[in-house]
Amino acid sequence: MNQTFYYPEAPLDATVLTAKYASYQEIVKILTEWAQKNHFELVISKNEKERRVHLRCKLGGETKFKDIAVRQRTRKSFKINCPYILKISYSKKAAEGSKWKVLKQKSENNEEVHNHPLTLESFQRLPKFKRALIGSKTTTLVQHMIRAGSSVPEIRRTIRQTNAASILTYDDIRNWKVEMEEQEKSQLNQINQKES
Ligand SMILES: [Zn+2]
Image 1 (cartoon, protein in one colour):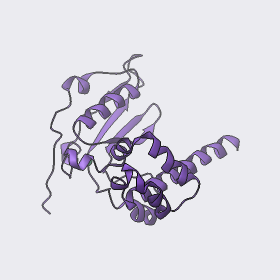
Image 2 (cartoon, rainbow, N blue to C red):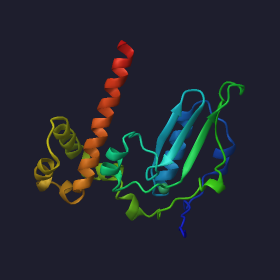
Image 3 (cartoon, protein in one colour):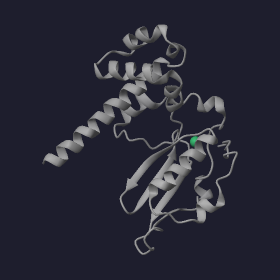
Image 4 (cartoon, helix red, strand yellow):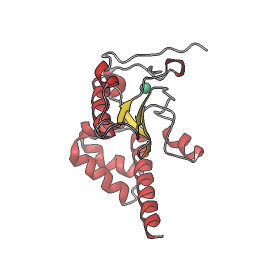
């Protein structure tokens, strides 16, 4: 199998890989900002308190959806199993204020490469970028309609007069809907867990 891999154009500052941090949030902020400059998006794929945090490329294979059928139906349009991953680890023994650090990426697992071009054009297809582009007013409108149970065609009809019409595709809105429904479900689960 012949696959082309792509490296981020601006390499990550070497000091980030050697420094130690008080919190993983500090590291996540640095890494996500760096990723955006390189036209890809990092998402937290694993978050284990006082153990490890994994950041994957948004186009990576791991999704929060356990149901494969749902995942294929809804996410196929933009997930392409990108192998890129950054792992942040916690050390119990390390001194206070330096317990978190970024691990070196394993090249044998292709952890430092993407399987898609890192161009502005490809970045612009990502949901996060699109939602930034359509503005907060339309974003709120779409979210409101999703919560109210509107269908994708209904939402498309409503935004026809706005700039969002040319930005949000049918698949974008459908993915957005699934994402919000999943978020709601996990929030409900958390509430139920607290109560039981
Ligand atoms: Zn990627």
